[in-house]
Length: 137
Image (tube, rainbow, N blue to C red; front, side, top):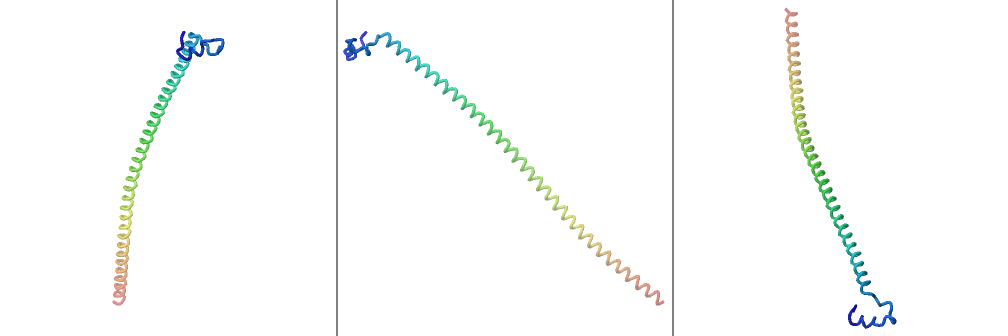
């Protein structure tokens, strides 16, 4: 089996360079074994890459799902806050109306009391005058 040009010349005398003498079938077997080893390694690396891509895709889907859940929770909280704010504003408005009515009722009560006190005072004065006239007569 010829290995080609200079290499044939280099190994033409097996006694002089026994380490370079290689049987063609052994070289071919070594190359096939190396090719099989590399092929197996490529397949393993390809499988690892595909597994990594699947894991990354799964992780990405989990992250997207978690983000969607967080966004949903955020929207729910915002809606609750808006509803609570509206309730507080309505309650504050009702409270202010009640306070205004109570203040108005207190003013009316005070006015009524002042009027009644004036009427009582006037009635006492009139009664006192009548007694005075009655005693004089």
